[in-house]
Amino acid sequence: MLAGYQRACYAIDENGRYVVVGSVGWEVENVVNAQANEEVRLQIADALARARRGEVSPLVYHMARRQMDLGMLASYSGFSRLRIRWHRRPRVFAQLPDSILQRYATALQIPLAELRVLPDHDDHERL
Image (tube, rainbow, N blue to C red; front, side, top):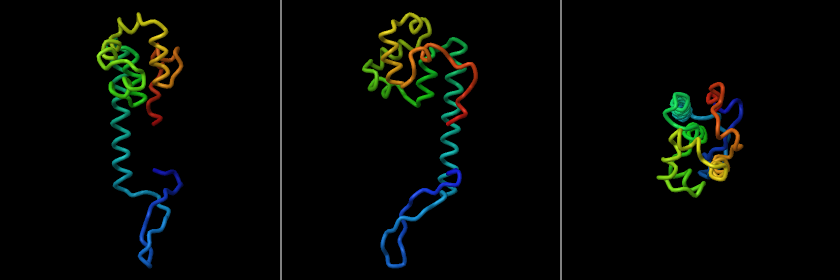
């Protein structure tokens, strides 16, 4: 999981003192992280599929890609949760002015042009 690198962990040495030691990971932790990453990938794939079907706006995909929920995006963008829910509708999103879209783009740390569209291919495998 760490691709040949070691992570610093604390252990107790023979004198009873805490020391920093290298670890290549713990199998249980690796399994849990892999499961969590797979769940995130599934959420991103679902959001992308729903946006492509026109059920939700591209905003939903980009929120999933950045692992942001309504509360987090509301905090970063300054919009209320209710307003963000409204903007998740494709017809509403398509009519939003650039000033509002730019606030979303800034909060999601993506270019404005990228916010308006969906990717051609599923690049969510790169977590």
